[in-house]
Image (cartoon, rainbow over all chains, first blue to last red; front, side, top):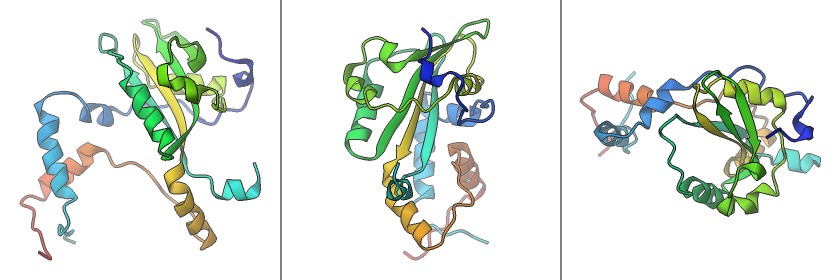
Length: 53
Length: 152
């Protein structure tokens, strides 16, 4: 089905071809790994964890 | 849009959610959660389209209103602003694999509007933003093991 006429000929807002975000896609693949990863990420945001510089 | 409304406008983002061929299980859950976000005032849905890319790379764009049974999205469809232009469709579809279907949403982060406006009123300017991939957080944590909690 065609796009609505209001979308044709207008200046776009995206600007350039978008690249696939492969990293984000991999993060949400099903399976046991994300469960373990969730625990690790949980640890990353646990209060009391401090950066070491 | 009045100047005060522009001042309170939250950041506008877009998402392209791809459903690869053979992995398209639509139960209505996505629509329900999207409506929940809008009704909670977390986001304002500005635009939404459905894209399909065939095996030859040809793109078909479908307006949300033409995408079949909208379920709870009916309530949102009437308020869409049709921000995306035809050129945007081509640019967004560049990220898709052949044979996939993708939902595209453009939304205002209402939750961030008051904070952003306050920052502007204080003279602040947004000079960088972005998203930290989960993998980057994992890599950082794994490189930092063992964790050393402090202040406990």
